[in-house]
Length: 341
Image: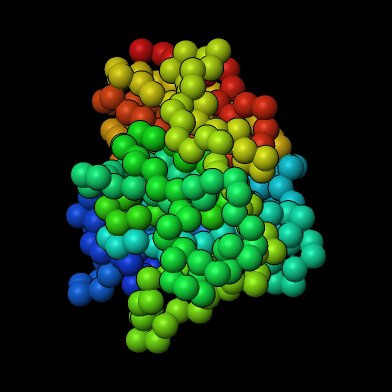
């Protein structure tokens, strides 16, 4: 690829879902086709099932896969599992109805199960209706495989599920093996390993978009599921040694930080060459130097990719702004942050 690696804004891949609605358009500004129910905007996606595309600069329209294959380690960093695939997946989700109860495999499961890919994920709760909940783990530690299978067969699985109330600003980590579901009235930002491997265990006996019942995966789920109570479900961002920077989560395969600035300023930080960075604006706006003489303008709920070998990020904040920064599991993402008023 002749164009040098540079920062690019991305256009999401939109996904229709039986549990989706219209909040992606009404609340988050995504352009949706009329009369369809959309559940997911894949902000950053390099999967066979869907690709986000470049939405700024000379490479506008190019799918993320082509960007990864062209820039390789200059884009994905030294720590990425593959040089030609982007190593993270970022989605905005609108649960107008309950999602299916499901579980994802971990790396050990993926190594022994054909077609499985590890899927660890973190939810940043953005918007909730009154009384909104999630499902995270089971109600006790005494559930056996036989108990679980009987509950599924008898239509009583919901009695075993641990429901947790959530609020805007909550953080929920979903480690592989956790039985979970996003329930109606919750909208969130999901950052995860780049996998779409999902084992459904319960789906409310409803039809899919094709009018047929959606497939369940009880046998596969029981091979990977942790049939116990979740010790911790909801957390909040934690302060770091760097002013204006909070730690959202430090997962086994990725790290998420949050940058909050309440006054106009120019901001810069160093980028670890081991990892690319994803910038997602939660509120306010961000004007970022793209590294080849241009600017990338980001409004609320827009995302950009920062190549791992770009060296540093230089941006301007014109109003109070909050930015989520995600990358691989490095020690620090927003390194040596500097503000110039």
